[in-house]
Image (cartoon, rainbow, N blue to C red; front, side, top):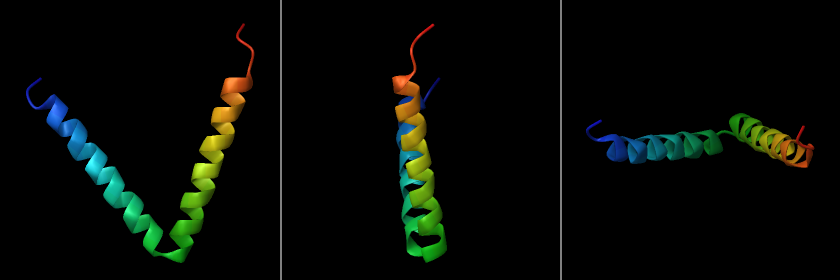
Length: 52
């Protein structure tokens, strides 16, 4: 697909801009921090589960 590697970087820039915008307001900053904490909890839980 033409431009596939270029569009990957465009998506990363877009997500970084969204992250910056979420850091501006206090309410969205709290939600962002809680979301990152939730993902960290899920990652730890996933890594500590025994494989069946």
